[in-house]
Length: 190
Image (cartoon, rainbow, N blue to C red; front, side, top):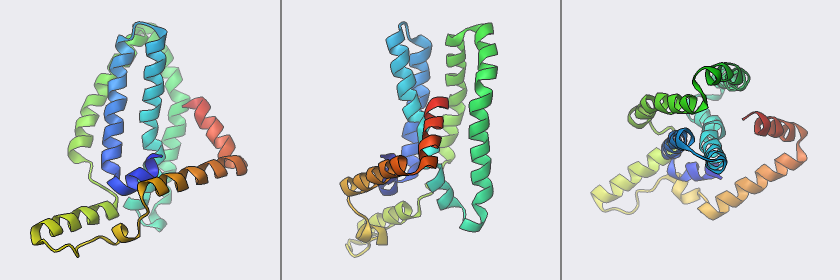
């Protein structure tokens, strides 16, 4: 549901909001006193953390021309899959040594500098959103309502975009075995 939403508002706001939620969930995990809190925090953290994997294809599409997109996408995929294999190994050893609460706290604290970098340095990659913001600024400066980005003229509403993206995703999940089994793998490992 976030993919069509970020087409309208931009990737930066979705990435940033998701990363803030992801970081805040570490606090809830480190301080959680019962299993219900931990399950809720892990579920929310999984949702917030999945934003990066959901939007990376579109982000790479914004950043690279098709001829140069394969290497960055392959590197991202390799790192993501390697991380699901390597994380339980090093996390198991650190949990034995310092306990899982400290592991969660350390991960949360280590994400704060990265959050600052995201807030200060991450630029909007979605060209259409940049043009919409520029057209809005020109309308405000000149008072001329004719300044509009082409995507504003052609883009469907949020309701239609969400419906189209969810129906297409569910149809692919049910009709494509590769998508179904990769989705099961992702659900299991992540």
